[in-house]
Length: 374
Image (cartoon, rainbow, N blue to C red; front, side, top):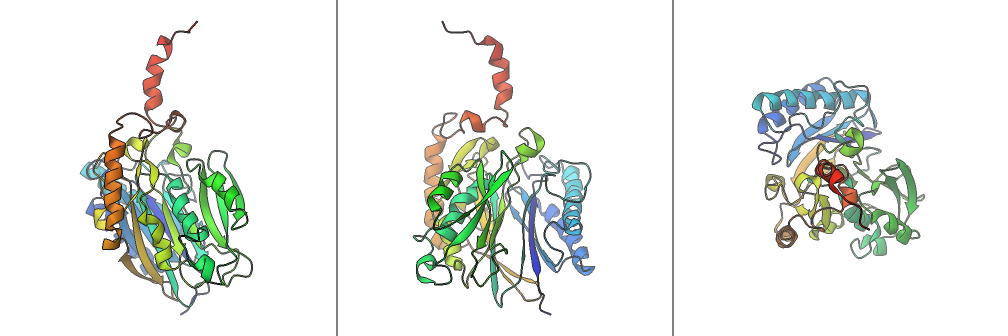
């Protein structure tokens, strides 16, 4: 049957690395699959897929319960809890580190895992890309999402497709002050860039069409997870490793326009100990196993067609393409360049961004040794 509305939920968590912060152990994937399979059998889920990106377990689910469903969030929490039990038995590194609370309390937001969800009225053909990043922060999506939906040099449809010519609306979050603003492009492009260029504070949360688009103006066409673990826990306990969902085609950026921003391995924050800048490398899932200095940061793109019944037709491992070899090579060159800075900025993050890392513990030991300069 064709469903009137479908919810796509991508929920991820680092619940144990194998070894260190490198990758997800296969038994964690198997455990999560067992939990979600039962939920599909009992009708909670329409469909699901369990993926991995670096040391993050990724749950990709479709259902008809809407965004922030207690039942679906509780299901994800149970999958992570069961997988954490396996991680502890295997002695994996940082077992359960993203599960910041002892028990589920109705909504997984603020409990550690990252979440990107959207409820949509499926089009006749609904192409979707889920993006999965490791060793970086939510603001790493600012540049590529802007380019997809607002940069005519990236997205030709903004110029030649009448359905896109009016532009899009961007929901931007101030993740320090917990506020948001809606901005429209192209008319507010410069104001938007003034905010999202400060990617550690202002992050794109959602993109919406404008009134008059064939898609309802209140229905998101892109959404990014914006959970920052240090804002939740008050101290550095792990990288944010964001995820995103982007719809494509038919009045939206074409698939190639959605992927094109990642042909440039732009600098993002995170990498080793969440404390360094480095290039974002687009890789197939089998290569999303960061090892060099726990990096460099990676991004995986999984392509799907959402069937009228809500089934996940896929995935297609979209960066498993030699067309992205140059981006990977350039990322390696930038990695060499940045690493030669050692502990110096701009490879290491500026002090204001180091506040929630382990550096304050080092500086605290020296506090009483500083003398006033006359």
